[in-house]
Image 1 (cartoon, one colour):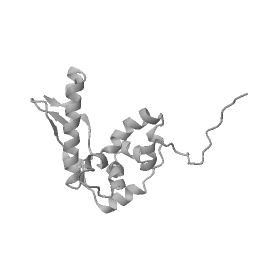
Image 2 (tube, helix red, strand yellow):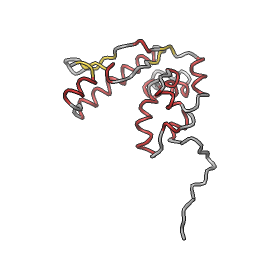
Image 3 (cartoon, helix red, strand yellow):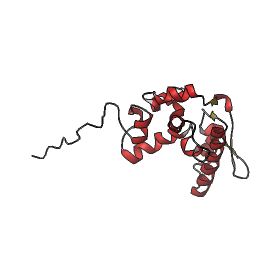
Image 4 (tube, rainbow, N blue to C red):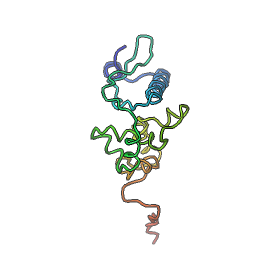
Length: 160
């Protein structure tokens, strides 16, 4: 019981079953926020409450912002979108919302505003590329690095 950060500090990690359940509930909560037209904007363990029954609740909606067309357009052209996450820019968290341009309710969990935070964890594991070096939101999803182009020749092998 209490916030997720305190729980992990005090007791260590959640069991795999508890973690899956909590992640499912967190995804559902974020999906509801996104369907309401908002980006949550402050996803961190301290803002995730675990109830006595093991359920998850989000707190601290002070960072929530409406997903406006201007914000979507700004993110579409944003460069180094994941690096912007670390400097506190809420617009950087809208990369997938921009890709969906107001995606359907069914797509809300996958296209919601907090998805780039998950990409920051998943991209290096999937591609070996650092998402902080990505040129844009699209590059971050592909695992691309700054300075790379589709024409880059990676055949620099020294086969002497």
